[in-house]
Amino acid sequence: MNLNMSAPTHIPVLLEEAVRALAVQPGGRYIDCTLGGGGHAAAILERSSPGGQLLGIDADPEAIEAASARLQNYASSTLLINENFVNLQAICLKYDFQPVHGILFDLGLSSRQLNKDSRGFSFQHDGPLDMRLSPRQEVTAADIINRSSETELAHIIRTYGEEAYSRQIARRIVRERPIKTTLKLAQTIEQAIGGRKDRIHPATRTFQALRIAVNHELENLEAVLKQAINLLGSEGRLVVISYHSLEDRIVKQLMQKEARDCICPPGIPTCVCGHTACLRLVNKKVITPSPQEVELNPRSRSAKLRATERIAFRDEYCETAEKLCFAIQDRANGWRRPVLLETLRTTFWAS
Ligand SMILES: C[S@@+](CC[C@H](N)C(=O)[O-])C[C@H]1O[C@@H](n2cnc3c(N)ncnc32)[C@H](O)[C@@H]1O
Image 1 (tube, rainbow, N blue to C red):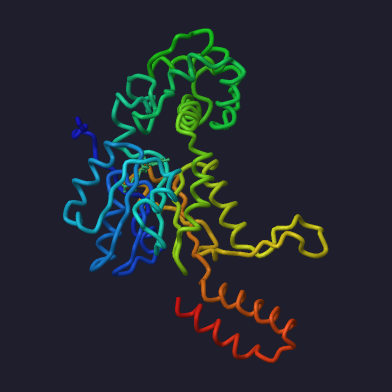
Image 2: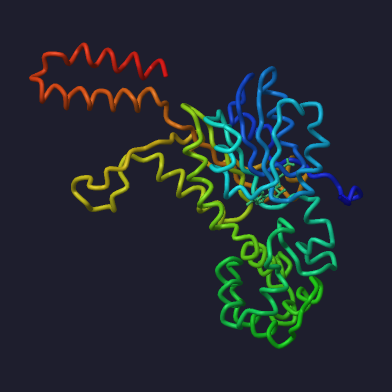
């Protein structure tokens, strides 16, 4: 495969913070769901040796190729899979890789992908309007731009780009079609909204929206986070670095929900939801890059890291054991409760 070796390598974002939040330990078993160039993966492997294991996943075959070159010294401890992370649970089942000590998501794109003209992710380079993470995907950005109705386009640009000028942009796109290249699309957007309205380039939000739509980014994120929680072993860590508010909202809401015992709407006098917390928030406040990191790597500026820990199974099991004992006590007038409780405790604690 022809890798663009001239592209600057990707600088891992919040590297030290991510490894610390994962609480990486020797002999641990970890999953990097967004392998990219393998920057975070290399740090995880280094800190988890001796005996550590890493499952690395990326939808982009070029990322897998770059990461396997970088991680070749750890080849016997790594399993690299070219797949969409939305299939995480199935992948772990297939390779018998669960439960795990930590799972990392470093969402979005790598510099390598952004800088390669032929991938069509950037309005600063001329290229085909592609934007697919994997060549196995069928729908490209050009398909969406040239085949959607004006209303559909406006909806995509508003919903996934949070763009205030979505209707004007959609109207202009429909008038200028066919649009096949990134620069033609960027010019069309500039014409639609009349140049820069704020600090960012006028095409920024529309390009973000298209990328999200082409790769079903938000739906996939929502689905995979739930799978990830189920794959964590007792006290396993889930760490997510996101780069825009739509992603961060999904991560924050799910983590906060799963860290609460009751999720009944406010105003309900007694709990009716039966929900129990399965996570503990590791950092109450979101972690962002230092000014030094942003200066060194401007692409890190929008990064937000959130981390949670799977609540210790011992507590969950013991609670269940106690409930069971109380149920049995009711039926058997309590005569064997202490013995049963002790048996259940030792069984669950040992597992
Ligand atoms: C920001 S880069 C990760 C960089 C990496 N942490 C490093 O240090 O080199 C994000 C990577 O996630 C991959 N990715 C994004 N969404 C994905 C998905 N749904 N399934 C699999 N990989 C995905 C992209 O292809 C890209 O390589």
